[in-house]
Structure formats: C-alpha cells, structure tokens
Image (tube, rainbow, N blue to C red; front, side, top):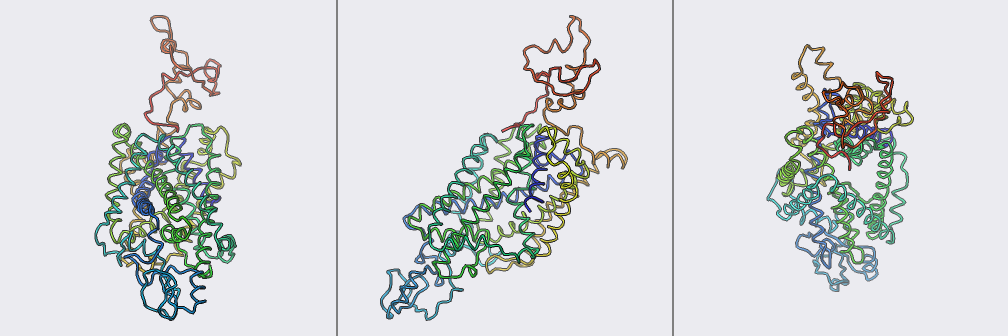
Length: 608
C-alpha cells in the first residue's frame, strides 16, 4: 500500500507545492474547477488540529502527574479506583497460591482469612474465584475516571474539566510560540523535537527488551498471519493508516513543499520519507508488543487473549501500565510523555502551518503581511472549539471525529487529486514540470505516467470499496454510539467532500463567457500558474517574462544614446539564464544575463 498508493500521491503533492510555492488552496490554479479539493483538505486539517491537540493536553496532564515518587496509576488504593481494579502479577499469584491464600483484585492475598500477603489497604472481601475478564488495570481507571472524568454516554456532557482545559491552553500557547517567528524557526523546533522523540523511543524499546516476556511479544508481532491477507477490511485499514502516517491529502505536504527551493530534488525526498515511515512503524510496533509481551507474562495471560486496542487505549493505558511496573518508573514515564508531547505538537504545528499559509496565500494582499495575527486568531478559535473535548463526554466526541475524518475522505480526495492532475492538467505536463525542477524525469518515466494515470485511481477506488464494505457501527469501550451520533459523523466526513462540487459550481457561475469557454477556462491552468519567482519562469520562458525580455531582446537607444537595459543594470546582482531558446539575433538565452533587480517581488518565504 505504501508503494502503490501512499508514495505516488505524496510525490504528486510535493511536486505541486514546490512548483508553485503556494498553499493547498491556491495550488489548484493548476485546475481551477477542482479548487474544492484544496478547501476540503483544509477543512480536514482543521478538524484534526482541534482534536489532535487535545491528545497533547492529556499528555501534558500525565507529564505533570508523573513528577512523583510513585505513579498515580500504579496502584488500586486511590479514591478513583473501583472494586474491579487489579494490580496482581505472576509473582503475587504464585506466592499467594504457595501459602494457600486467596488473591484479591488489588494484588493483596489473604492467608487463612486473616493475614495479608502485603500491606495494601485492601477490601476484606474474599474472592473464591478470579475472573480475568472482569479485571481492570489501574491505568484504565486512572485514564477514564481521573483524567477524563468520563461519563456513561455521549450526550451526558457534564462539566468542564478545568485541569484539562488549562493543559489544552498550554498546548496551544506552545503551538503559537513555535510558529510565531515563521516556518524557519518552527522547522528548527521540529527537528529537535523529532530527534528527541526518536532517541526516547529507542531508549524505551531497549529498556523493555530487558524485561521477561518481551521477546514473546516481539515474536507475536513479527509472526505473519497470512489469513489476514484475505480480509478486505485489513487492506482498507492499512491504506488509511498509510495515508494518515504520511499526512497525505491533508494539505500539509503541499504547504511544506511550497517553502522548499525550486530546484530541490523532491524525488529523493519521497524515498527518504517512505523509508523513515517504515522504520518508524516497525520501531513503534516493536515497542508496543514488547510491552504487551511483558504485561502478558506478568498477568500470566496468553498473548492471543490480550485485548489490544489502537488509539488512546494503547497510548494512555497499555504503555503507561507497562512503564509503571519498571524500576524508577517515574523517570521512564516522564521520558515517555515528553516523547508523546513532542510527536503531537510536531504534528499539530505541521497542520497549523498548512492552515495559516493556505489562508494567507489565498488572500495575499490582506493577510500575508499579517501572518501572526492570522495565527493568533486560528489558535484562539481552535482552543475554543476544543473546550467541549474537556468535558466528561469529550472522549466520545474525540473518537467520533477521529473515526470519520482522517479515514475514507482522504481516499476520495486522493482519487480526485490523481484524476485532476493526470487527466485534466495532463500527466505529461506534470512530468515536464517535475523535470523543470529536478532537471530530469523521475525514473522510470513510463512507470510514473502509468501509475498516476491508471493505477492510482483504480487502487483508490478499490481501497474505498474495502473501507465501506468493512464498515460496522463502532463503539468506544463498551459504549455503542447512537444512530444520531453516527449520522452526525457521516455528515462531518461528507462536509469536506461536498466542497469539491460546491466550489466547482461557484467557480462556474463566476466565470464569464459562453458555456464552452467557461469549461475551457476552468479546466486549463490560470495565467499565473507556475513558479512563483520570475527568475525560475525565465529559465524556460524567457520571452514571456517582461524582466527577461527587456534584457534579452535589443532595445532602442534613448535620448542619451544608451539602451534601456544598460541604463537599469548598474549595481544589480547577476543571475545566469539557462534557457536554450534561439533568439532573433541568432544567440541563445544562455549567453545573456538576467538582473535580479528587474524581478517582481514575491513577499513570501520560498525556502527553508
């Protein structure tokens, strides 16, 4: 899925952004009729930003509560714990059995109905039989009952958890401060954060490998299950995960590529991105399953019977539970949640820069010089939208948004992107643009032509059918969402997709001329489509760039006997013009010089 669906669409988005140096909305000057694709990607990025930073708020809450001698989710003696809470492990079970005792859910053992195996303040209720299915880990109760203060249903909102609201405010303040000085300073922050996250990930993985049972978890992780290949839902889920991990069809790749140098070799970048994605997935999966293997060993449970769920259950329940059993657990917990905060904030910064740059590029005269004001307004607006996620029902709303937003809508957007660029704009024109930037066709030429024009659209349709065929009413933990909530989720996911025909209709109504001319104008690139800087346009079209034409073609002398070009050339920096077009005097453009002082200003960062 990575090579037949993920990387081709990544390559396309990187090339579009780098070629035009504009955001995900304005880049659709390439095919104005499909400008709604850019609006749709922007809406998806907005939704993801709102709930993604809520995860950062949870991590900040955990981080502050990890600064204690004992982790609060390591025991069942807290006020939020229930009777079902259990911290028992392999050693406590074996020792309790050896003393003919009775094991309590909180890990205590009653010997002869009186003597306790340990000194925990346990209930005196005796369990004649221990049912593991009713066992609840303390990390589960800490996350649900203390952090989230979770209610029993979606419409039971309750009150705002002000501790989470403050943590959310801190997260958005960090985002604002990191992006305040522009994309260059933000890039440095991301470099440090990502590098630190990888180091912490590797350290935690090595530490978990030293624990008993971790190798059995790794063996389970790397053991292929060939029967899963016959399950269409597995293929659909894998494709969605590839799109989500690569941030495809969210506008982020277009926005970041717009800051690259025009001649940056993005063909090399896509392979580096693919390798990094694979290695990160392998390392993260190994970390998770080494922790699962250790927990199964401690609980004396077969690894096949361990209920491992993705999302918040994995990040805030399973891994913290395993870390709580380590020596000097608070130190490892601090490292773990610093890593989570770095990852989430880096992702949110990536999406926020997408949103801000796209809006400023769409209205450059009014907003580009007020970049910081736009950033402040969006951060404040998204914080306000995130406040409902701080309520007792916040986790239900977050899961609802995460289930319906970054899933099948991304596949639909990928299909329309590939069709618009490959069939309407023309795959040959697109490959020529890539050659313009990297100075060679991406090898092999015929592969990318067939891939973008035929294979990608078909694969995206197949993936979409796999996702829809495997659809089933979802639930969080034991709570099954009502029909009105599912209908609302479908409405949220359809809203970005509806922008494609809606924007096309608006563009068509605003176009002038008879119907055939309107269609022709909307299906052809706009006049200003192309490289943002005139110096790059002049490389291929020197006679169409006024600044280059005045320097290349002979100009009549003025009253002082000097040409217009000579009069304006003093004190300006020279740039070679590599165009090979033959001019009227028999010379070529490469023998002439283009002066930077004649280039029209482009008030935007174009390279990191």
